[in-house]
Image 1: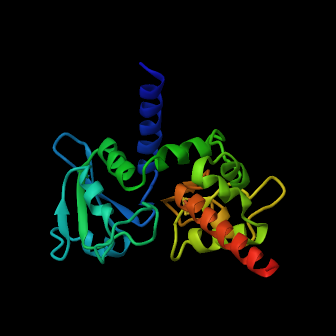
Image 2 (image 1 turned 180 degrees about the horizontal axis):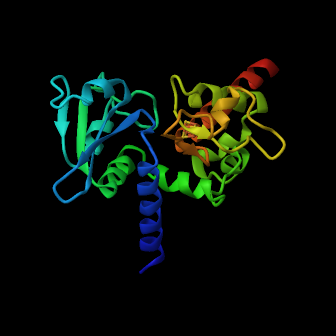
Image 3 (image 1 turned 90 degrees about the horizontal axis):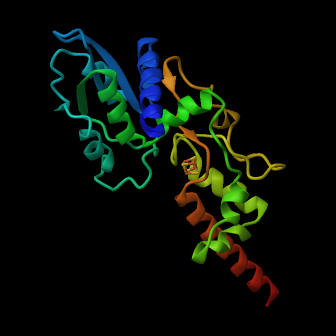
Length: 234
Ligand code: SF4
């Protein structure tokens, strides 16, 4: 078996154990156990957490039914207004659907479509094996037009993180990286930086390195700072 196949099967085993132990939520998605099928395989419904009560009904009248793991791709593509979601962890997953699946492997596959790589990251973090990268290091290694991002000021970096990563309007992930080795994130509440600060049965979404949206935002902010400084000089 290749290393990737071994890691996949290990992650699936961890995930199945997590489900059996009462795992019930990932991001905005609720996972509802629904008994077993004729072969004894566990059945589940996935839905938006705010639709969980309705999804418990035998036939949820107000929710659209899906039944394939890769239906998650379509569900997660756009928000309630129909706008494209460039960040899968933004807190605007649309409501009005449920996904009926059988077996932990299918649930894991669907969650990987909703939140790519998050299950693997969670288990690697739990085992102390998830590498984290400080923001300055991420910015330093940018090339081309994104090189300018590294010029963002300390205050600008803190404001940028608050603007893009705030859980209520930006991103649901818990941040594991600092700005730099001697500069922690000070512009977000402590629970945003604490993977353990989640509800019972919830798997945290983890950010171990700044995403491309934050890097692009850093470039724009650095350019604005440079323009303001040159205006001040003139
Ligand atoms: S840097 Fe991480 S926490 Fe911030 S918006 Fe990107 S993925 Fe979310």
